[in-house]
Length: 150
Image (cartoon, rainbow, N blue to C red; front, top):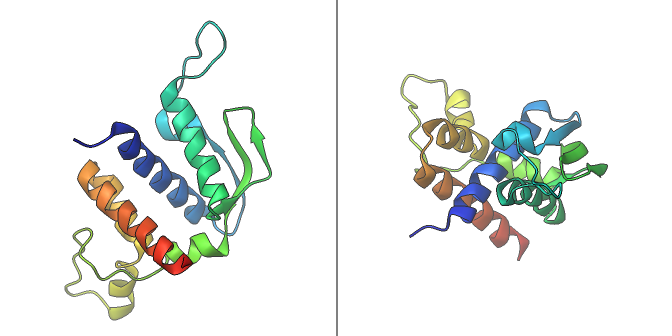
């Protein structure tokens, strides 16, 4: 049985990376509620575990060198975030393994190559709303990153 926190982590990290890639090289503010929806704090002003996990995913991506940011905005998000060169390179890497279904028939070769980038696999996995596809793509993303780190 899959750990729900890991499934959420894969989805959150994919959405965060996709958001930053969409505006690259500009900086942007990332807010947790943009990825998981509004959160209700409890009577002590504490966020839900789900909110904390998404915020933690943002910080983890920064600690691992995929993004940088200027400052945290309380526990609501991060200010002036942007992809690092490492993050951008990994997102634009061509992945020929069949992570998601990509129709490459009658497509010019350049467009066919673009459809095989990691970011395109992420987009298709997120759009499929399949936890299995998102997990497969993000495992490949993090696996490739780990093997390139060694």
